[in-house]
Image 1 (tube, rainbow, N blue to C red):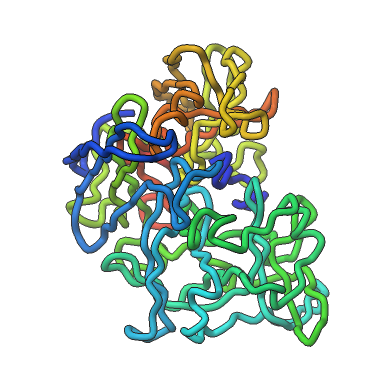
Image 2 (tube, helix red, strand yellow):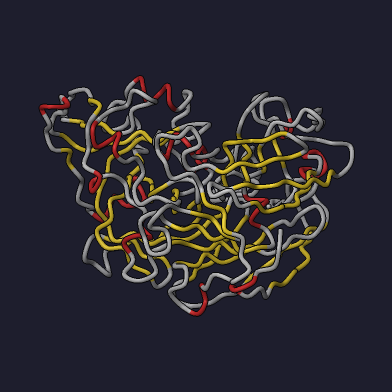
Length: 446
């Protein structure tokens, strides 16, 4: 199973304590005017600590296109600068890049970096796996779609951090695309290639999850039998793209691992929200864990280790138990815009178009307070309180940031997705496997 197989629900299948070591100075500002609900008063909530050149702002707002659409709520964005390797001047600064702790790698639209002349990455020929030489092109699937495009090397700057020569994906937003999209990729995308900011609800994706690269050994060997093909070799000149074996060093990489010092993980700190949410919210993305005074792990933090055995069905998961039901495939993910789980006791009869059967939001008649027990791969447990408020009530406000939005998964699903609502009012740490502090396996902490 690849990391992409196990991760989340971008955009549409997009937990609550003190901010401990990362400080916690937040402010509220009242906003009056139009929003999702067409008017009224909403709150802008800001968290402006910690500071430092290893930190940058996170903003939860309406996104690069503005206005509401399914999936536009609870989407965290950051600003990223992409440069030609070795250049401090030949750069493009890209705002509203989707911050996703459930995927790996930077993915930006080709039109945003076309002037930089980024060096493309080529797949070497491999007779043993029938891989021809050609441009390295990836189809990276999410729940509601996929992104398609070639790989290139770039210098990536975020705040004061620099990842030099990191492989990134350049999403092909040309019409038609430079390389014809294979049928397998179209199937992985459920027919929806996200090749515009409107369809992606972002100007790119910054995946800073708990692995160093986005696929691993299956892609090294070219074995895609357990799912969809991720990597292709595209020879060009009209030749069809072919599933490819690709060395790990050429796969899309977690840019955090390329930072000189603050390279072992990240912290996402978001403010607590008022009742019925906020119109916008800002917080902080912090690089490194225990590498500076502003990113120390509190002594009372709860560590949740995920299963680190690729042979296990629960690989990269922990378990969540609620009212006697155990969800073995649980994970924490800023790239999921709600809490997602299957609970037959919660009403789903939403009336708003943004709470219809397709979106499958929960709409209980009154706020539901729940308690979950999380058990990690080492057998440690921690209790987490959460609440679920009717999506109809939330979407009738001008808000875009909600800590009590929840949606359904398929009946009997083993997953409990602790999406962005979990992040409000706390600092969430994500370690990176193989880096300092996570040599034996990755973990989250809060």
